[in-house]
Amino acid sequence: MFAGPVEFLKGVVAMSGLPDADRLEVCFAGRSNVGKSSLINAITGRKAIARASNTPGRTQEINFFTLGESHYLVDLPGYGYANAPLAKVEAWQRLLKQYLSGRPNLRRAFVLIDARHGIKDVDEEIMSLLDSSAVTFQCVLTKVDKLKAGERDKVLDQVRGKLAKHPAAFPELIVTSSEKGEGIATLRAVIATLE
Ligand code: GTP
Ligand code: MG
Image 1 (cartoon, rainbow, N blue to C red):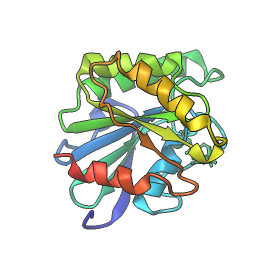
Image 2: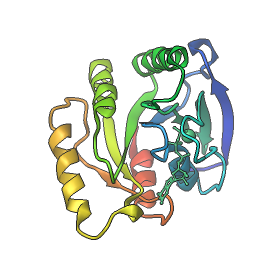
Image 3: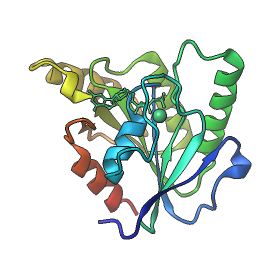
């Protein structure tokens, strides 16, 4: 589906470090520990191309990966990590805002939502930022393997209800488990069809 290798390109801490906007780009946003790096690993079929970890706040830079010859995948720093120093949080937020509002090749943001928790206030904040930046975003539920039978419909309802209020939200949800592989092919297919 994607010709060519998947490679880590670079980690970026300032707008000046962004690679040229010469490929289609998708980014992965979400609360700290929601499973962004794990999802990127699952999509690329590489076990540890993006560093996944139990320690929240692990990914502190904007990490760029090449997917085939046509796409960048972007792993964003997690937000909503209560124990991070305030100055650091503010620096991330600034960079995140600049990135989301100033990237011409960004085709879609995937906003990851932990299936056990649903959409929280910090998620609403990033969604509002995406609305105002006119970046189409699509919600990806993560870690569905951790849901008990019958919990799925409840969280899907909550997420759909909240998304209805966001003009930049793409209505279709993607339900995933990086652990079990559920939804990964769907997500790859969505990325492949973006133009
Ligand atoms: P930050 O970089 O800190 O923002 O975290 P992240 O969003 O990149 O999360 P990461 O991928 O590092 O995953 C956090 C933890 O959740 C790790 O212990 C993963 O193994 C676990 N995890 C991620 N995806 C899944 C999943 O689909 N199922 C289960 N059961 N665990 C998962
Ligand atoms: Mg990470």
